[in-house]
Image (cartoon, rainbow, N blue to C red; front, side):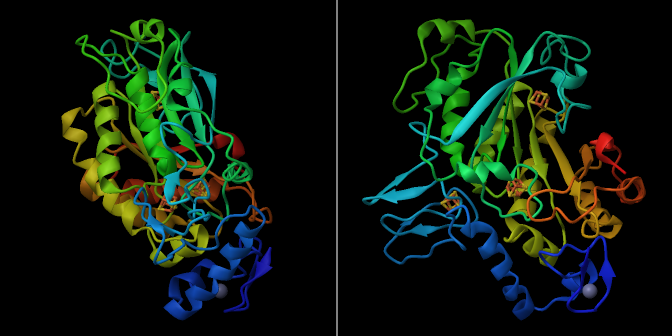
Length: 386
Ligand code: SF4
Ligand code: SF4
Ligand code: SF4
Ligand SMILES: [Zn+2]
């Protein structure tokens, strides 16, 4: 509960950390938006993360994401995990990533579980082991401990405590975690974007090689021959859950892997209004939207199971039906069959004073998305709704 410092209205759906209501954010000019940077700066200080993407003229440029950090010697990029050590760019490479993983029995509570091969058996028998939910198999859930955004509502914010600790694993170590029971790998976090070289390398090492060829060369570290043989001629879907901020060439690699393996790329589209996105997430949304449109061009290569899925977190007071309608219209213009999940929010990180998403909000957003022309929309996390 807070009072909006522009219009003076008090609401339980106005977050104290912003002290601005959604209507006033939509109307803000550039100058007022800059004032919001202080909120994000404070949110990052406690985790030793740079307040903004560094732009040192003598620094090394990192091109993995939209932030295009120019990192000075001894410094770190906005994500915290990429760093300049004596003129060499480190972090997120096949040799070292801040990452952890676990086996998640299928079917699992995944954003795409209602349409994907692991959750629904879509694409059986080519892409799934069973015609329904893939009981008896596991998803290797890979959590990257850094992110390129700074969302004030982050539901996984604890990763920030590990972004700069340099406790790392190689891509080969991660690939060794794939067993005969693993039928999919989901790269999420945080966000995989800032450590994509590691994730792509691990995928190539772990993936089956259906035509017996040799897996690609992948930096230092090797997966054992036994593990590699075990992975031949089998289903292993590669999926991603991301904010979509990566460079377009990396997105192409992700999409190719997902399309070829029966997996999908799940884009979290947080807001369509540029002001709301900047206020909530600290950065622009233009790259995400451009990338989503590029990803949609790959759908015809393998329409089912859907290789591209969208989701939006229904942050009370901020991501309302108006916002969802704009996002859904954008998706529908690309392809009305793209599945879209509306996710319930629970109070977290710097927005603990907000209530969880109400049924009323979820239902009005569902209606807005359907009216916008989308054919496959559903509400996720219903257990959270109030
Ligand atoms: S991944 Fe993005 S945020 Fe991280 S250093 Fe590179 S450009 Fe900066
Ligand atoms: S990782 Fe992919 S295939 Fe597995 S449950 Fe998630 S979306 Fe489905
Ligand atoms: S993009 Fe996701 S992981 Fe990154 S800060 Fe936002 S909510 Fe958190
Ligand atoms: Zn207001």
